[in-house]
Amino acid sequence: MERILFVCTGNTCRSPMAEAIFESKKQTENFEARSAGIHGIEGIPMSEGSKAALAKRGIIESHQSSTLTEESIRWSDIVLTMTETHKRLVLEQFPELADRVYTLKEYTLTDPELLKKIEDLKDHTAQLELKRASFLAANQDKVEEYNQKKEVNNQESLEAQLLDQLHPHQAAIDRIEWDLPSFDILDPFGHDQDIYEKTLLEIESAIEKLLEKLDQNEESN
Image (cartoon, rainbow, N blue to C red; front, side, top):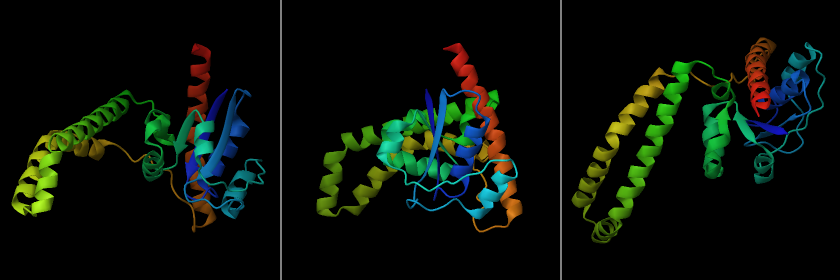
């Protein structure tokens, strides 16, 4: 059983649409989807725009919103967010799950060049954080001493040394992020029905790629 958790902000527009489309298109009961909102309130109905967009495809929903919890995270095998911001917020709460939290568009990406850039980005980010942690650990005594004595110049010098060590990785991260396309799903909240339809098409395209990838993974196992 592969369990997919879709995540957006309030769990009333994008993530419940993703859940509903996934469940309507899957060809096997080996896959299961749920959805949640980072700032969701329990029991709020799906937005009327989302309901109407789904209804055009014959999908009738009685969704009630859910808040993202540790329980829902632990239930899932893969967490797929609607935007990069959602992904960052999930990882801030659950940093130990970095290997299974993605944006929906990122996870369904097939372009080899872009996939290579994403791997390079992850590598530089990991190296940057490793060097930062190592530097701070090695200089903790100096940091505490400078703070106690309020030696601003020495503290600034130490910060400059840290930035100098991090610069190659930060420069690489900035360059790669500039080259990468946006992996965000359009937020229809507060817009007219045409935007809800556009968002649904965007989600539907990604869900079709997701199901194809899951089917291939199942066949290979």
